[in-house]
Length: 147
Image 1 (cartoon, rainbow, N blue to C red):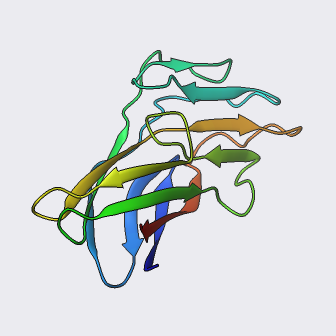
Image 2 (image 1 turned 120 degrees about the horizontal axis):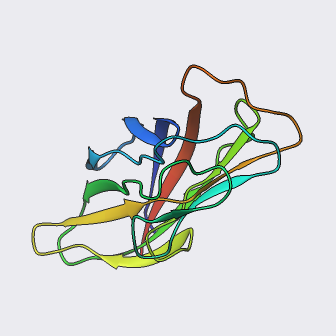
């Protein structure tokens, strides 16, 4: 089983930098939760299958799912798994999820060897209030295993 590990860096889950080997990939649309209210013990979640947001921390009713296109082997099936950051940043935890509401899915590359992932997820705050001001950075991993 071949495995590709992509390291995604983001600002409030906004895709910006990738590191990987043996494959090419691009983020055409970054994840965007919109404005998030810094309350303790609150969350902001993308609704499954769409761009609607729900939760006490969401100031906007819609966000933008991230589109990440991966080029691999034509007509090959892959298992994609998203892993959250190692810990919270600025008292905020981020769990990246695919548009199906799960951190993993089986996907098939097209005849040109490409497939696109749509990523949303949820943000949650712990017991302390996040510091307002600058965007919060997250680093999470996308693992792609050939089936």
